[in-house]
Length: 140
Ligand code: CMP
Image (cartoon, rainbow, N blue to C red; front, side, top):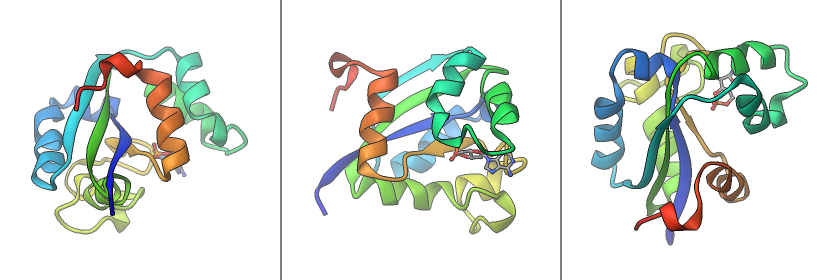
């Protein structure tokens, strides 16, 4: 598998508990390199655009409200098979199902407040990276 890039968010529940460094350490220990990173506070509308694919889901409004409730850290992670590697480090969406040692098993509070987001495919990674970063901000 070639070197790949994926998009990651450290969510408001995690930034509120000062977990950015602990989560980044897990990414780096797994061989992922943080090639772009910024801490921002989304508006609900900006979160809504990012999660537009979930617009018809019953949890959409709650999800957007939560993602705008505090700062997030938006990131681009680079490494071998980065999308799958990151998803393994994150663990299952619902922390009750997440494997021991994963970010969500250790830090997530619920399926909604689940500490991290990661792209699920190369196409979504490209769209998500472009939503938050310009090419000049990606420093490999
Ligand atoms: P994420 O990987 O960011 O992608 C979509 C998000 O929707 C997901 O993580 C969860 O945080 C959230 N989500 C999924 N299912 C539910 C649910 N049943 N209730 C609230 N939020 C959810």
